[in-house]
Length: 343
Image (cartoon, rainbow, N blue to C red; front, top):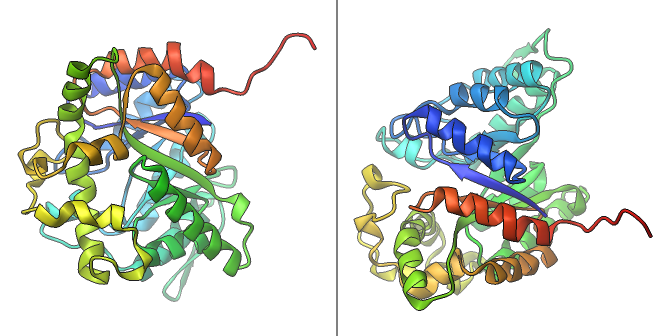
């Protein structure tokens, strides 16, 4: 299993670049960022600097959307980065959340998401794409390669993922919900005539390594409670569409938002978010990975058995540096495939 990290583009950008550089030093494989240009700084500018100051990590948004960015410009940006730094990008994409809502908009339709994936993928892989009645292609991008990973929760979005995506992003670390979403994506892929094994699976959630004490666990919960509020935005959309238990959505994913009373995007992704107070401790424990290193390794092993290829650590709390170090020293070495010098 790969281990990635998810950063916010909170100024100064030099701090984001430094965290990315240290993540690579500690063995992280991917550096993802939020893509919400009103709340934080422009990620694609920062990607160029991360790529320039690292050698191996793959970078990309978790996640971009088809609404706030022209699809051909998005594809051109990835293809340009690939030309400059050697195919080290990945495109995470969804219908849109904070980037769209802070501007007064709404998430796009699944049909628009599907069309945008086709256009971005073809162009960023050096092929031609159809825009209405016009066929377009980058004449300079023949060597570029780009995978498109879709972030989704709802049944129809999961089906779309299985039908068209190179990878799937689930933004929570609950094994039961992961099993349901992964199963739905695989079933959709098979129904579409695709090999389900060809789709990569990424689980992304806050991780907080503690000393094992009750006091440290309580602090970690408070630092990660914001995540349940963020996930609640997406779950609220699902409940609006399908009802509390419609569409086969697991009850574990919908019950906890019963007392949710709105959300302030000015506090999006921020520890101490006052609009996440409705999130109970049990949800934080299920959606995030908290505790000593052994508890992190155990959860990661459980997710790996479900078919998860990457766990991406949301690093939005007060222990950024220590989390990178703890994963590099005590967790990543224990989940890597063992290699012996002699046999």
